[in-house]
View 1 (cartoon, helix red, strand yellow):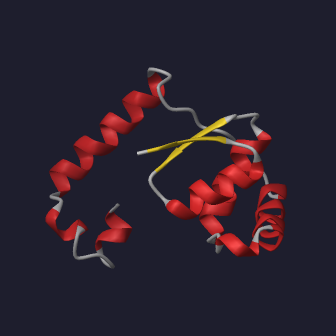
View 2 (cartoon, rainbow, N blue to C red):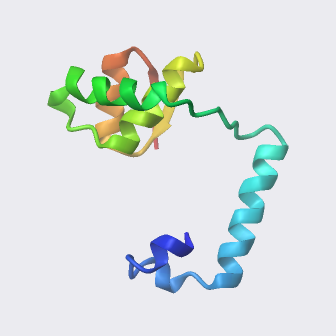
Length: 100
């Protein structure tokens, strides 16, 4: 977030103290098993590039494509997102999609 703070007026409203609290909560969620981390090997970058080419109608951005690639490789079957691009691409890839 601190890197993004330089480029976003929205993040300027988030204090450094709150940023640390949010990051600590994020790490706690991982420790509790509520969030999972997956290794990112070099091959996923090529697969993400291929995914963008495979679904040009969705206008996938690179990080979205990488997210979907890692999820597919990890055997994840459901995607939760508020992003309409991710919804469309996830459905095209066969994910069950929960919109929020």
